[in-house]
Image (cartoon, rainbow, N blue to C red):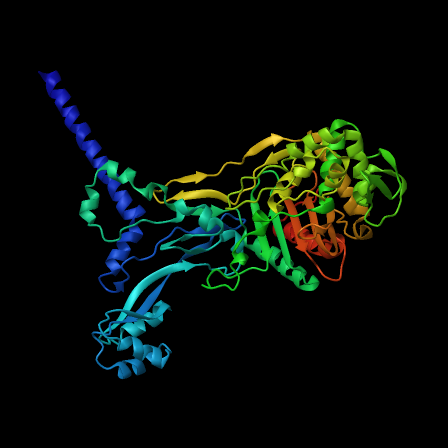
Length: 567
């Protein structure tokens, strides 16, 4: 009897506990998770709101100390409208309103006197203070409606990366950049006017079945100070050389976290219209380019990894050779005579890497290039990633393999170029570049995006040897050795690529793509920097256009992150 009584007591106690736990959980959801929703409802008691008050998750930058900075958020204000059916003195009302909110007279009168109409908008996105002042006028028929809209505090900062919203038909959603990539996280489906008590006693099943569980904010890897400095360098470079486009990426080559990603020209996503919608796309992810001589370190790495060359291996450089009936020359056409592989990299000699391909053989060279990832997408968390054009590597002719060895005849996206070459900085490992490091879900928990190491592409010793050769080039050859930083090892390679004439017909003699890659500290790098500028004017080589901005970025990062000397 006592045992039965005790069992009933335990059953009742457990039931009460579970019910209390359920209530606590629901109250948490309503008071914490959906706090903003009910604030909106309370605010409705005092201010009229649009029927669908816009809501969306926040995109954050992250400072080096871990603090968050809004990159895309919500801004509140008012829509000013009129109900023509309630307006009694349109002229007098115009004079009152125009004293606070300058408005076109004829437009206001036409809307305020429109017959058989109950709603006409006068102005949108009026700031909060002004909206409240207009509301205090208490003009019959004048509507002051609370609204919220997407706001980008940094204006054009990282705009091609952050992206923007737009309409597709009647749907307003993320259309570019992270706004599109993380639409399922950032979008909101809240109903601000569901009864509070009905919410408390709704079933657990109905709660978990809603999209709320996927809603949240995203924290990016972008560091705003680094992004700002990069964009300054891109803008000054583009202006100085009248370039068509200039872009850059700063990434941690070990983790794949992108500290900065910028393009010039850029745009301000706070402005509704643009003359050319193509500016909203991100050429760092979507466009493909023949990258030129920054590809040579990959060819040298393949040669060292297989043992067919070392840094001290020599060949006879004649300046020009003929392959499959076509002439292949050094950038200046000059012969160097007996030359070692260090000078091939330092002086950027096409015939030197052509010799490496001959020693490797076409198949082995192609296998290495594909293993580096030139034929793959990176999987970066941005939409519309371009597919690299590398079919020349499958050619049966020697010519296509030789030209690929110095970055012509194959086209890569900038982000793929960064991933491929980062493997030479991090000990031979391919990593996945990414922009979001954490998702903070609305329900109160967070998800950290893990570092993804894809595969080992060359031996660690190979990567370190190529890094050493690139450091030698900076210390002794780049700008005559004037770029050497005594206490820091900086590895770098410049590139100049001819641009193919559209529709065939060879390459332009006047249009070039300049590129520059580098990383430091060279033997345990924290930063990998990629820069390019398209069709600069009045200059021929990438070393002339991009050395200065590259070194400016290196020195900024050393000071900003207080990087300790490594030599």
